[in-house]
Figure 1 (cartoon, one colour):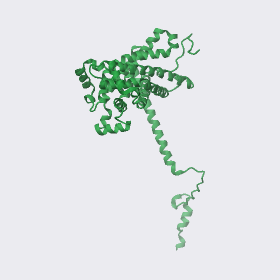
Figure 2: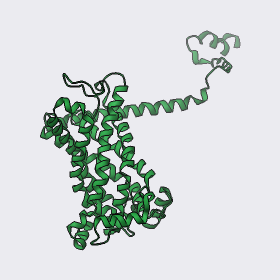
Figure 3: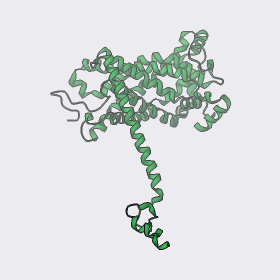
Length: 391
């Protein structure tokens, strides 16, 4: 009887082509790897890196699209902004406000250590030691002592500085004439920036007085608050007390700003002259990258030029006696600290000012792009009939 029925093996042989899963199919052995083959065990790591790059690219593209949408809305709301019109100067003023207010507030911890070391060079040996001591004694908020007067003061200063620079650059250019302005453009940058800074420092000085006192006294003067600090100074010394550091502030800021704007314009022009093509050939991101690079290099020069006056501003705001004459106070302080004391805290300030200046120009030019305006600097074509400098 068993011979009347097919066996299981016979059924599998007959029907396996139509039903391939009827019995297990032998898997061929994996080929042996050689020393020339890539390692498959690290493929997942490569995949993770590629995924991260792809996601970062997607986020960047999405951010760029959102920036363009917001920019188009802002430009539609503001309307056409003609160069050197009231709208143009208003946009530059607001861009300067953001550029200086935000960046100076962000580096408050560096500024705090710099000011305290200028007043007492033996207080801290370095930045990290200083921040550790301050955080242990005053908490994390202590590291940002003085941020409020810094924000208000440098926002006001930045508004007048950048808006004023654009105004005075056009004003002096018109006075000199197109050909003369091109031929002596560096002198034009210096004159425009000095004029703008002269006004900007008048707006900054009251806030600077509160900032320096709050950062150089322990516990902080007026608890580090801006407007209570202004009220206390006026009550004790009158309105003149807010401006007792104005002369050294001018001595610090005007050379600083002249170097900042003139060297930035020159460095950016040199960068675009070195790069192939024209400035207009480069993307928005590339142009703001040039702005940051030019600003950082200009900031290093600014820090060196203005540092002695910066030390004197800190000393005068902290140690000038009531009723003491300006010249007498400076002479007394110089006798106490000597020439070497005028350079206390310079390395910290170079890092701080270089970063500050680079970020300020980047933010300022990004805002100009946002409003549909060209970025600052770059080689301008000479006017018709003018001979380029050096020929």
